Length: 225
Image (cartoon, rainbow, N blue to C red):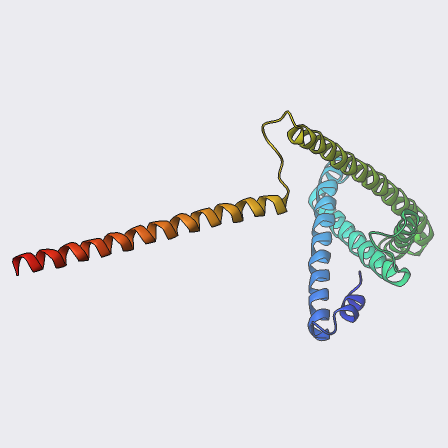
């Protein structure tokens, strides 16, 4: 969900300015995380590749890190803008998410290819990163579907197991019974009433003992008085 939509939905409960500030602070944190991850990956890749191919592996690693950070940042911003414009979210159909990622890949490849490699690399970069965006989002959708199916299957198995043991416990041959929340509340209330009744009996016994003690004291005073 985009920042403006969040502010429109919650304008009665949250000041719009504060909402935008919170949204952009979250976006800046995510952007910083994306840049850090991409830059770190570029640094590692550049270090290995620079050691093999370049006479200055440190400089090659730094340049690679900056390029990867630029690619990750551009892709994240492009996909966020496209998702906002096309109203694509986590619950959107898989094809819409693939289109958003592929288009963001084309924008990223074209911009970064032209800025970092020259204008001749705009079209090749756009084509290559379109494929990367399409492939990456397709793999993510596949993994997401598998994870959802596994979660649903686990929930069904747990429900079936729980139902089986509930039926066993509620059978007439079982010495135990599974109580619902309402039944358990009734049992607790009944126990509480029993405790209150016992406390009342004890209070009566205490009062009776006090009265008997006072009577004995008064009789002794009369005898020795």
